[in-house]
Amino acid sequence: MSISVTSDEQGAVVDRAWIDAEMAAAERIYAPLGFHVRIHDVHSIGTELARIEDPRMRDKFVPLVTARELNVFIVRSLRDNEQVGVYRGGVTWDSHTTPSKRYIILASTAFGSTLAHEMGHFFGLQPHSTVHNNLMSYDREDALVFLDASQQSIVKNTTRYLRTSGSLNVLDWIDH
Image 1 (spheres, rainbow, N blue to C red):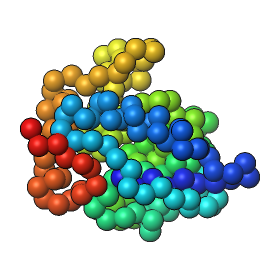
Image 2: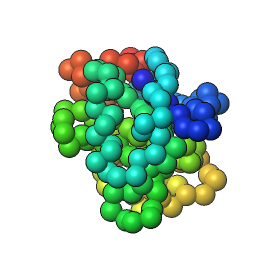
Image 3: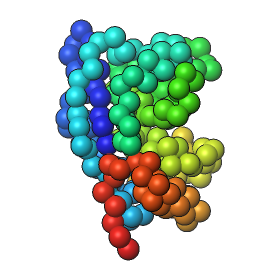
Image 4: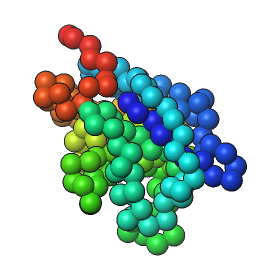
C-alpha cells in the first residue's frame, strides 16, 4: 500500500500514529480474510491537494498513482460531491479522466475505521449497509465493526482475483 500525505500551513495533515491506527483497524478486519494490510511507502505530496473542495479535484491524484498498488491519499478536508457544505471522511475514487485509476482519499478528520471501510468499497462492497456497526454502515457506536459472511465472501473473491491477475501486488497474502 502506498500512502501519500498532503501538507498545509500547519504541516503534515496527519502523523504516523494516525496512519498506524487506520492500518491497525484495517488489519483487524482483513487479516482473517486472507491478507495482511501493509504499508510499503509513505511520502509527502505537498500542499496543492490538501483541501479537496470540488469533486473534479479528486482526479488530480491520477498522476501520483503507482501501478499495481493500493494508493491512499490523505488530505485535510474532502468535500462531498453531492451535498453542499458536507464533508466526507473518505472516498474510493474511480478517476473520471483515467477510468483505470482507482484509489482511496481519506480526510484527516476520518474516524478509526475509515480506511478499512474504503478498502471495502475498493474490494467491491456496495452499497452501504444498514446493519448497526457493520464496517460498511454509517450507523456506528464504539463497538468493533465487522463484515458479514456475504461481504467476507465478496472481499475474498475480489482479492483472490487481484492476486491471481497481478492487478495488485502490495498486499501480503496468507495462503489458507
